[in-house]
Image (cartoon, rainbow, N blue to C red; front, side, top):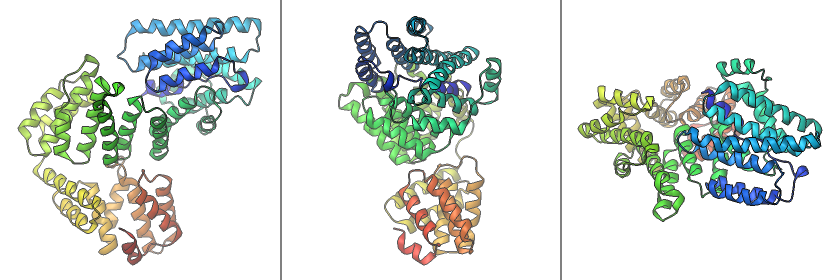
Length: 509
């Protein structure tokens, strides 16, 4: 976990504020846009062209280093390619030092030098060179602090300092040991996040980097999937040419929100873009999009559709080996849930050869232990219930969920949505246990069960006359409704007025 955390810290090395701008900055910015649109090679060519008019500007090679580290991260590790990054960092540092030798107060040079150290630190972490990464992070912070002291309004310096503050405070224990060894100053999580958010406007080069970093922060560290969703949607909207953003959006909707149908729709769009001939969505990216599509369909319990998509995933280049074996695992799951255990086993065996420990362990477990008949029946009932609920037939869905709980009591989804029907139409006391069980679960699946349980808890408290405690539950839903409009609307209604069963039945479609 250390590498991803510090990599996120260093992913958004600061740019140059407007006050320190130069005529070439417009061309730099246009070139950098190409990076976030998935065209790093063209970005490097355009940066090189822009640099011809300002050969002594350290910002140019810094931006080339930033593009290079992004490009390296999208490829399999190769130490041969590292030399290109080191060369660009060295050039940016050399030019910055030359400028600072002439004028120690050259803030543009300080920013470029600090930013280059940030890129270098980010790369060290990707190679698990943690101590070097920590030391270069300290050098980055030193330069940014000088810029901030000279120009407190410099948005880009504040952005970099905010990232440092945030991640230095949320690092796991081992990284804190590294912080001590490298004499890294401590951080402040709340202050850091506040500074990062404030940098969303006014950055000359890195408004995209701000948004990309906020997505990572909200998704993985703040556990705020709704805010993370807004950020990754923003990146996809601004840079539709790079499949990375579509894949991240589909993953987020699926894995952290449980919005499987929406995730499948995003992945389908990516697959179809490749089929229409959009080059960036073909090849490896097209394969990854199809695997994502199949996984979302599988988790949406559309097994036949998932099987058809995953069967279209063919062999690919070595860098896709892990993804292809994961596709085998997913295909096995789809087949087994359709009742074809023998067909599933063949794919589990292939997946069990994966280098990825998680895929290998899941495949080995699937080979050892077939799904129980009760689970297969329960999953089939939950799938039918979802389709009924999507069609607006909520009572029919509730009965299917209730049947699923009888044959497969482990399904939290079945229990909670059957409990909702009990709360509305039956005995509210029967809903209490299901709500308790969801709230006791560390990682309920689908993830949206968590806010749904808060909503039902609020209803139960209202019925019990505990109005303030009910409002607290509704506020929890409103803080994080997991992208569900109905949840948000019902929580808002509960916040305004106490829940009453008859009016709720009339209002729920």
